Image 1 (tube, one colour):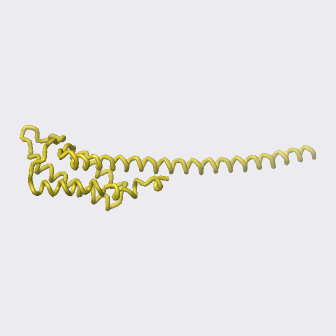
Image 2 (cartoon, one colour; image 1 turned 90 degrees about the vertical axis):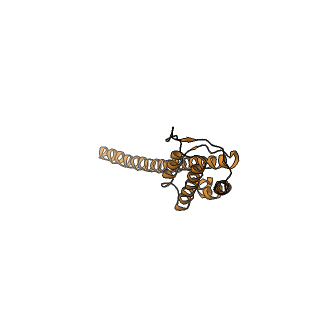
Image 3 (spheres, helix red, strand yellow; image 1 turned 45 degrees about the vertical axis):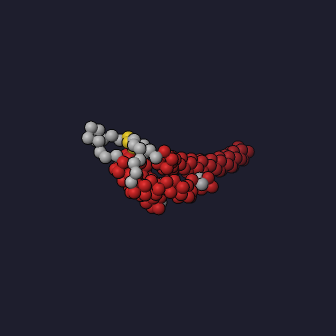
Length: 159
């Protein structure tokens, strides 16, 4: 009889310890989920910030240097990547920037018969009404790009 009581006590103790371990494992799993979710948000923020910086630098060079140095393929890749992490408003804005930069580049850089596939374009702006309009429009985008990206780059929205 005493042996049965000992076994019953052991089983009750084991059940209590099991329940405790189950609770600890559940809590640990929950904490890992929160950590992984925060890591995902931080990674998403970093990708968005990289795109923002690239666009901002492009617009800055157009605005200040009056020299257009860029790789249109890189800009196109940034826009393509943006489809998955930004809303339609930002995608539209980035596509408009691309169109204007491409148009400005065509005005300033007629195709080079020797190097037609030259990805890196350098030129000094020449006078012209459309050239001026495009440069002004792109300069204005530099001023408002922060507001456009603000929703996605606010630290309160990260975690």
